[in-house]
Image 1 (tube, rainbow, N blue to C red):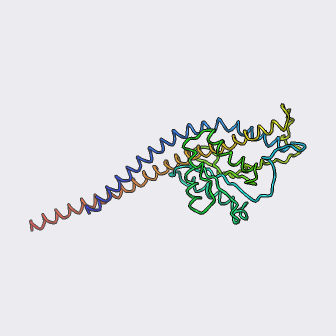
Image 2: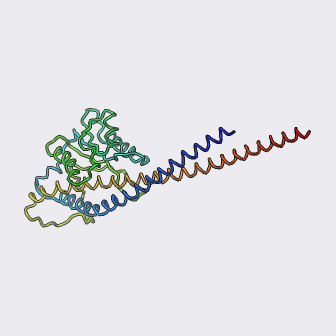
Image 3: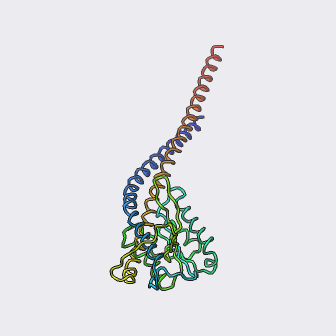
Length: 294
């Protein structure tokens, strides 16, 4: 009986130590989430407005404008940008992003994948490790991007997609990322990055806009497009960065709650075992006393 009590005590101490760790990790993730959330919330309206303007220009352009980033070609070679996190302990966050990427390959690019014409550009250690270890063609240059998350570094990664599409290395580029909603909600998104998607105008739509171009339309578009696309790429990275900390904070909060529930159950079991041991000892004492008296 004493051995069982000692085992339960050791288990309680172990769970209490783990609970302290999960509480600390939750607090760290909450602090990091605040900074990451501020960054994406300040960035998102600007990025969405630029994207709307870009799609508007491409969709309503008349005549032959030199817009290589919007060129529609037969899709033979594909680049999939998969943005995950560097670390785990954030629930199913990374696995859901990887599953989304695999689903996109299976549903949209299965033929190209079977021909070996699908490449993965992973950003984040977890995505890089998974695809590298499972036989995918991986560009292994930018997976450590979160170690120094700046616009210039993200721009270098985006240039792989932009230059690759322009020179014909890739005919399509998709981005897989997590859109940040709040600390408890992340939406896993598959988005066409290149070619720039055109939006069909409807008669009752407000999409069509009358832009005045200065300087000439061709010059302005050739300058604006890469800058806007770099901004979209940066927004996807910031979205995933904030989502990671939200997912980890939620996961650590759940782990702390589960540890508390497990402690409650173990303490009840411990108290019952201790009461049973005391009762047994008292019974033995009384029996011994009765035997001596008899």
